[in-house]
Amino acid sequence: MKTVLVTGAFGFIGSNLAATLALDDQITVLKFGRENTDSDLKNYVEKADFIFHVAGVNRPKDDNEFTSGNKELTEKIITLLEQQKTPAPLLFTSSTHAERDSAYGESKKAAEDAVLRWAEKPSNRAFIYRLPNVFGKWSRPNYNSVVSTFCYNISHDLDITINDRSTPLNLVYIDDVVTECIRAFKGELTESKSNFYDLPRSFNTTLGEIADILASFKQSRVDLVMPSFENIFHKFLYATYVSYLDKDDFSYTLDMKRDDRGWLAEFIKAPAFGQIFLSRTKPGIARGNHWHHTKVEKFLVIEGDADITFRKLDTDEIITYSVTGDTLQVVDIPTGYVHAIKNTGDSDLLTLFWANELLDPNAPDTHYQNVAKD
Image (cartoon, rainbow, N blue to C red; front, side):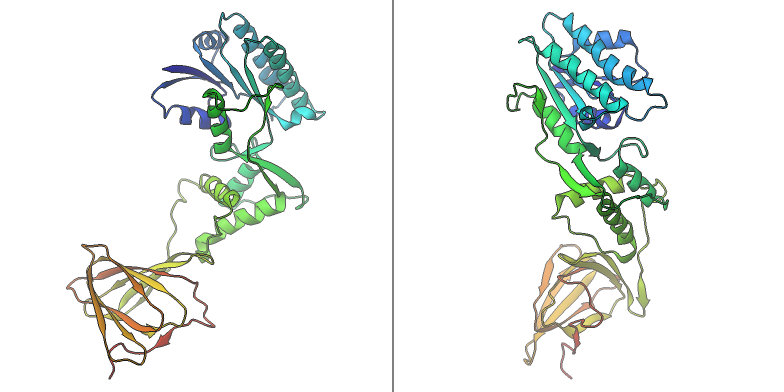
């Protein structure tokens, strides 16, 4: 059993780190935040086998808070560590602003210097990360990250301000930060004589690109078209964006196209994936009776009973698959086969469909013909 201390445990990075550490039942997490006292800090440092110092102030009302929240808190931790016979390793998340001439950057640089002086003693182990802009869930809008601000505003129908769309951004994802912190705790990092370490992955983008990607996520609830998540940056952005939805805005309604047969609705689609849709069909009713040159589909009955019938174009043989929602059986629809699905039960038939391409109204590749020849 190991005991770790997380400073800033109720902030953006700290809350993500503490939540992940708590998943390991061999780790006890001590959480230090703004409401804790110096006495709490002393008690926690004495108990800790490892210290994650991720607390920090970056947008205070008064610049003096930079000194107290960044430089002085770090110095307090160092002083307490110096009193320990066997001090715990210390991981400190600094900022790339430590290289810049600003009140925030100077306070971070002063904190780094305090850690480096302490680490000069061979028995003292330190890890310093100069993080760029970090994004992910639980980041505070208008405080931690421009990404969180854009996510919040766009998801809440608020305007965003961009003075220059080409403004470059270097970003790291919160899960990558947490993973790296835990690797340090487990002793899995490459040795560094300078005590400075880098995350293995970051993303270079622009303000304009971020805004466009997030706007596409919002639009996906309208047109149902999702971007490709083969780009892992887009995947991370989407996970971040969804975390900012208002609690009364988690759901949205699909367009159900109703007729005498029942209804059909698209669910989700993407150019590289195709589309998923579903239908409810009344007893005795058939859907389909058409064929495709290139479009491929999969049918999955999830409630009710149905016959899925096929006939290869220009032949007479009819092939029948009888399926039921009691057994989830996927049926592939080959190209060049006229096909239909008929509800053979006494109750409504609920079917899930997948097609390998989006519907193009100008070239639908859907050619009507009955499976059963007249």
